[in-house]
Length: 437
Image (cartoon, rainbow, N blue to C red; front, side, top):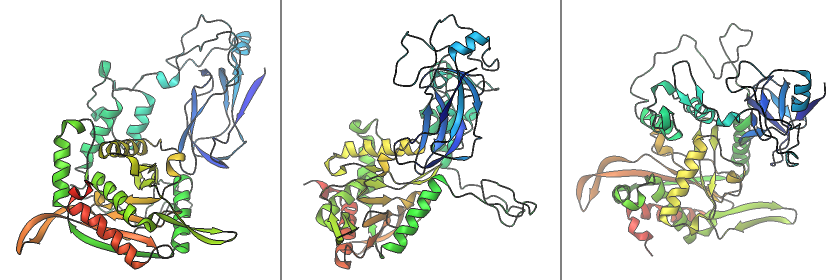
């Protein structure tokens, strides 16, 4: 019987290897062209691989969790025609594999068409509804999102048709659960040291190791490169952000922002864009060229937002953020956050950044000394916003106070520029009306 072997392709980002995260098919499954067969994790992205053939899955050549080089065989297929001739039945354990009366349709490579209008024997896996033993209805991408966010689907209130759990249901449940994450203090574990995910060694489980790969490998390499190539200098300022909080409250109540999530990060983003225009060197980059080092000053802002995701630290950026209105910037931040949470941030979204914001306030931190993203000259950290006593007109009053810190490449920008930039960001957070030109 003739089989077709599919090898791991370069998905368009100079890929040399990838981890096979999860198979979406099993031997005996019937698939159509472009059905998702597996998920792979590259240095920066989680990518779904589509099937290049229609037919039946023969053999899975790589186990989940294994790192594979580009060009290595990962799966085999048997064509529809050969399966029919041999009388092989589809996988009987698959609930979506009823007999089909469709005729024709041999194995076809992606992009060459079917030649005979052939259709798949089954619904595409991505379109199936999967029902658990307790009756939860949710599509596979929603189940993966729930796993990434550590959400138990049986506890989610479903709002979809026929009781289906939607993406919004999972995200809403995760956001509500995070509010209470620190109420209970866990007991000390019996093991003195522990690292996850677990990979036991030969010392009876007293210690475990984590393989460094994927996002963690790329992040560690970039941070070491930045820390040991760019001389970092950090400055910070404590500010009264009460009027920023008042503006956020008004925007949340505005009908114009009814479908948009608004947070102080929106005002921070606008402040950084505004301040970068006044001090362009924070938006520049040091470049080592063959003819000698040079500083490239950008007259646009691709605003990076450091995002802690279930897969690790990512820094996607909003392209040409300086051209966006307040509302469009808010929408862009919403899309960026949602995409990062779902693990769908593409390599293109993480390339070409010019300056970055890291919101460490969401973790309850007041300030920090962030490491500059490679290829940039500055990164700004926004601390938690909390009510504190503050002197206003000679009187002590409760005010919303935060700390803004910035790390900069001292090869590109001097102390006066750094200080002027942070002072400008602070002035916007203290008085957002300054954004109105």
